[in-house]
Amino acid sequence: MEINSRIRIVQGDITQMKVDAIVNAANNSLLGGGGVDGAIHRAAGPELLRACREIGGCPTGEAVITKGFKLTAHFVIHTVGPVWRGGHHLEDELLAAAYKNSLAIAATQNLTEIAFPNISTGVYGFPKDRAAQIAIKTIKGFLQESNYPQLVYFVCFDQENYSLYKSLL
Image 1 (spheres, rainbow, N blue to C red):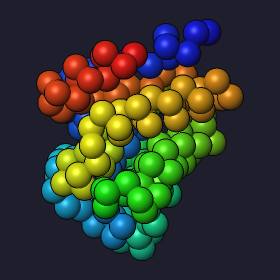
Image 2 (tube, helix red, strand yellow; image 1 turned 30 degrees about the horizontal axis):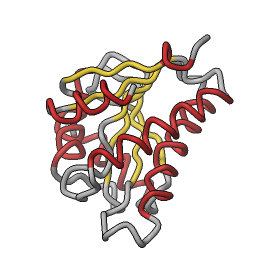
Image 3 (cartoon, rainbow, N blue to C red; image 1 turned 90 degrees about the horizontal axis):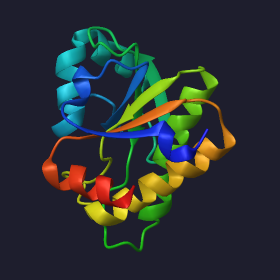
Image 4 (tube, rainbow, N blue to C red; image 1 turned 90 degrees about the vertical axis):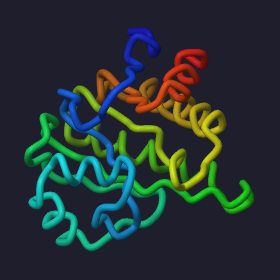
């Protein structure tokens, strides 16, 4: 199967995606925050916070999985993207690792569909164009080597990211 046929771009709310797993652009504590992280925690309910508290945190570039609780997605894969600090502190590598480690969890669990937000491009300040290129390259590379997940969604909350991803794919 052609790699591009396994990637979809949608504009909308990731908390409403009916997929096996959505990816949460979390902070290191996993205890909720603003943006996508806060929206996912609100939609999933307090059980998600309890599950994240039990995990005890996550290093930048790594990923962990919890149930989806009140979400339509069965699971939440929490990953911590890097804060942009000018591009000289391994930001590109850490962002790629966040995507790759999330995909690896999905593959290990044989999850068929996964939805990603635009990791690190909000309050973490990663340049959107650069982040999109890294995300697409990392996901395409992973999909060439793995049958799972079978379908990856980029869920763009805003028109700017949606247009950017559409043009790059």
